Image (cartoon, rainbow, N blue to C red; front, top):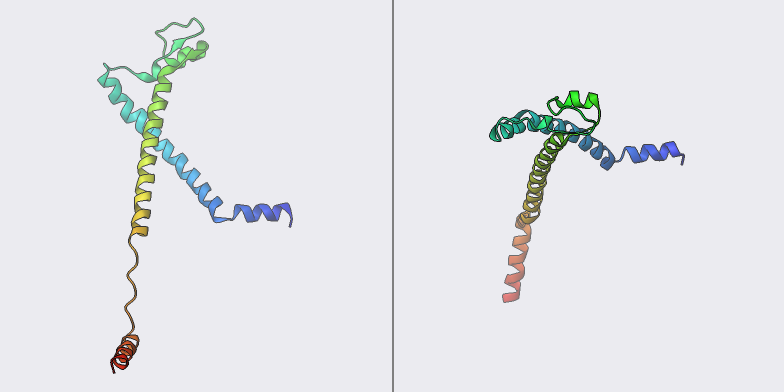
Length: 140
């Protein structure tokens, strides 16, 4: 079997395709969570803490002025952008919580499927009649 044929067999397996779909959906979902954090959560957190914008918090490492925006400070040299790090950590926590809830729901659904055994099929009428005949013959 050639290497190309082996790769084709590997790539067309269901698990590999499912994994690829999961990665693509995960990347799109990550963008949604990024927007949620940057456009919804962080402005509210900033407002609660006195109108602060976390994304522009940094420590200048190249003698920049502390009054510059983060973009301007980065152009002037290296900076330690801890505000951006805080935003990314909040993003991760929200994403991890959402994924945890999704896994939890899937696990509950699986347990419900396993816990509910299927009802046994009703016994056919001919089998019931044969049992009655058997029991009747035993009694005679």
